[in-house]
Length: 551
Image (cartoon, rainbow, N blue to C red; front, side):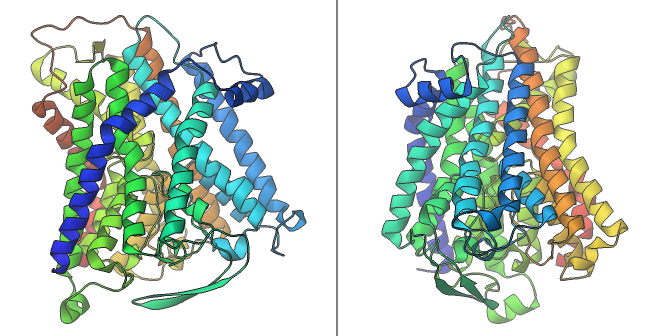
């Protein structure tokens, strides 16, 4: 079997597994977020924090709850790191420096999990488990909760209420993320990942270099980070380390875990709005964009564009010899199409066009399928923009799922779309204007790509990196922390405000002039709008970076 054939089989098996999981898993998540029964554990949590589970919240109260919970989480995690040397199981590590503690606290609370440090040599076990791993769960739950709140805005009418954030957060964490993480951890341990709390030494060899690592691997943290949520790994080489990702089938499993939740959420959307075909349409948009990305990045890496790759007939620099080119490229596509950020190869060593695809995946807004929750609400915002554009073309007031898209709705949708590109481009320009681009390993177009990738990853809450850039400086930790913070919570505020505006409307009856939003035409329009908006926004930056390098 050729490398290309093996890669096709690998991808097709993932597609089959995701299709098989779409309906049953989506229906399960729907029951979780729409049910009214509370478990004994959940009732205990509500009493502990003083929450009335029966009371629902307006969009403003829901947003304030999200922000308050996240602010407290950042403060707690920052303090945890600063006091690490006084804590149990610190392994003798010093307290994390202030700018590093700020960056990490914001990173994990925003579900970015950008790491300027090597986890095994910087963070003690208690900080890893009670600080970082906890945020692996709850930051992902926040994303799903906001997505569900937006869908309720479409589903409800003449109501200002979007549910209860604290109830959503608790249910999603206990009933969805925790069970899958446990099952994933068990599967990874069967595959050879190690679960322990003892120090150890491991060596992993990648084509292009050897990483000497110390510390104890934690299989459960690996399962948590692969749930389509984040890339905060115990080892600096992440899923390229044999203790975290031992075999080719664990590599397949990790990619499946990355994709299964965000790809199944459109089913929840369809069930909540009472039209399953609407969920299928959103899932189709995700699938088209994802398959195009996976195919292109595989083609670019297998073609080995560049003098050295063509000379040796493979683009193997920075890739693990256990996985090869295709499985590594598929992992790279999955991790940048979502807000995961885990890696099993070094994206900085990809071909110019292959590296451009990883950048482009994040620049799409990570909507194919995107992060847990954030992918769904991002794509629904793009659907709102699409119906507005279509309405302008035919001279009719745009409608989506029976809700009119007026000036308030399109302003909120536009602000949502514009905030992330502004952070990426302004941040990249600031790095060059202040001379902080000098920490990049390369100069010229590739050096620009390294800086651009860092801000794209941070602002889109992805967490992966080109790895050819040193970011452990006060300027970089502060700047990227601000991008992660603003790139996470400003869009959430716009999404919740949009949800509140939609929920207050009365439904508009379907007429002959209503654009069907469940048919292939609409699916194609959303795909086109997504690609065109990104191309218009980022093409100049890409032309100066990876495209110039490729030429």
